[in-house]
Image (cartoon, rainbow, N blue to C red; front, side, top):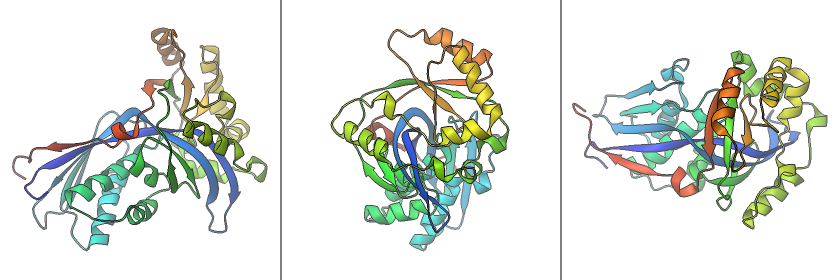
Length: 309
């Protein structure tokens, strides 16, 4: 594609249906087993080529763009990494409409990076084997390779080894994001608080992945997240927020990634309007979301050339 036309890609949020920490590795990372799935809550990433030598321009808009530095955003870093690997200049304009709360454990930045890599593969006519693109994605973050696949997947290693699964049966949920200080949102902070007694052998995550592979619904008992124990013993402020949500009608909350966002499954007939209002009254940002298929998560739309580009 060299006629100035651009691309718009969906950059969906994710939740970890299950997440177990197996051990701490010699490289400082943690070995995990997790099942992740994409959601219809999503950022939008638009990419246009610029004239040779114009360089990279990253523009962030939307409700969750205010506290993010465009110069250090993962979307721009992904473009720079890929351009370096190809020996070319990243002469691009990248616009990211931020609809995913960040940080929150929903993977917004990683998803934006994955969308950029997918888009540039098409925009620049890159003919790489999948493992090469995944290896580059893993240098940007452990979750980025997952977003090259979308849908539902079993992930291992530090999260970068991705085994796609069948699309899950559609699931509806509410996402609740508590008002917390920035530090309480940091993945590194939570990993630093992990103890050996938080480790497990990953069998519940494997069992859940096998059920999904058979097109069976995930059992509630296997919706496990090792970080929930970490949060419970070390972050009383978050626990106080979650207790308010329980009191307002959340029967069971599940941590999204390392948090602090949580999700609750919603049954047919639930009074969503009332629930949303009750949770907002308790200070939460509330989003209704549904699981998103692989095909929908990887959607790409061509855009006309930008005026003056």
